[in-house]
Amino acid sequence: MVEQWKSRGAFMVLLALQDGAKHGYEIASYLKERSDGFFSISFGALYPILHALEKDGLIEGDWQPVGAKPKKVYTLTRVGKKMLGSERERFEEFVGAFGKLLGGKP
Amino acid sequence: MRWRDYLQRIDAELAIPYPERARFLDELHGDLETAFALQREQGLDEVAAEQATLREFEFDFEAIAALNAVHVPAVQRLLARLPGRSRSLLESIAVGLPLLLLLVLISVRVPLASFLREGGAVSIVILAVGALALLLQFERLFVWFVLRDHTATALRLNTRTPLYLAAASLLLGVLGSSLGCYVVLFAWSAGQIDGAGVKIGLRESLSPIVVGSAFATLVVLLHAALQAGLHALRVPDEKKGGTP
View 1 (tube, helix red, strand yellow):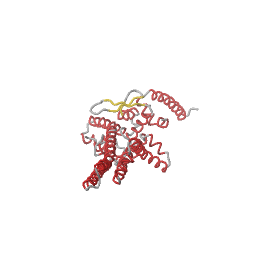
View 2: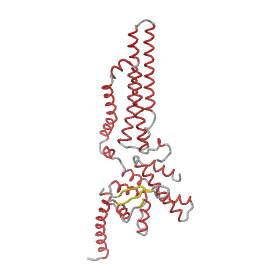
View 3: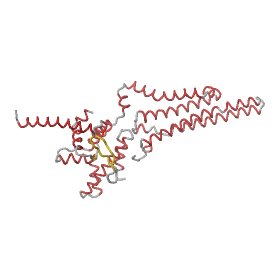
View 4: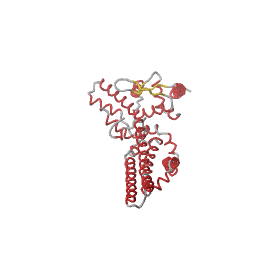
């Protein structure tokens, strides 16, 4: 669980789901749009991450009748939200520290 | 269906067990439709939108391997830790043990030994053919439902061979019993045995057909159960060109 969770892709997927349920295509589009195209995740990389997170209980998939074909929509579980919160804090600390280094501050 | 070829290709490359594989293909299908609709909204014609969508959803070898790795069944994961020889031994025991237990159970519940003795050589042949058919069924049971191996190689085990063997054991039973009856009636008509001997002879002659039909019934019932199990898991019918 921890290994998948700590990967950058898994973190980004959890971030994409923090403001509501999304299906696979929406997650990929969300990440690309929100990062102005900086982060783009291929579907070949996305599905293994989604399935691993689902197996680990961090997200859950539900089939919803959207349009002609039912779509699998993912949401964060309680465990997933908790993990995202703690990882987010850790990442913010990391970015802050790195920012200081880049800024040349002591 | 628009994505049939693409989904069939992905299906063939995956080693994910069913029904997870069927669900993933459904998920992929749903996302393909979304992507296609968006391409169309952006003004592309059908062919261009389809091509653009397929480019977006191109899966390389690593992606397939990653998906397979996520879905490796727990039993396969455990067995993979064993050395090759131990694994083979364990798998052989897992396949052979149910057959042995079944034969022991039959021997306890019905006088199998006396059936075989009375039926003669043909009953031994029926036992061998029937046991082989049951062994093939137990192998399938183990591979498909315990190992949960639904790769193309594993699903190629899905042949009618056990049914042919079941038919063979039944026909051998009919032949053995008919021959037995003929011999008894011939001896009676020749005055070699009396009425009491005929009764015993005819009873003993029925042994091959009892043994043959018992094995055939077991094999057919197991075959039906296995096919129902595959259907419940959403394995496409013998993987004959259809996505689940």
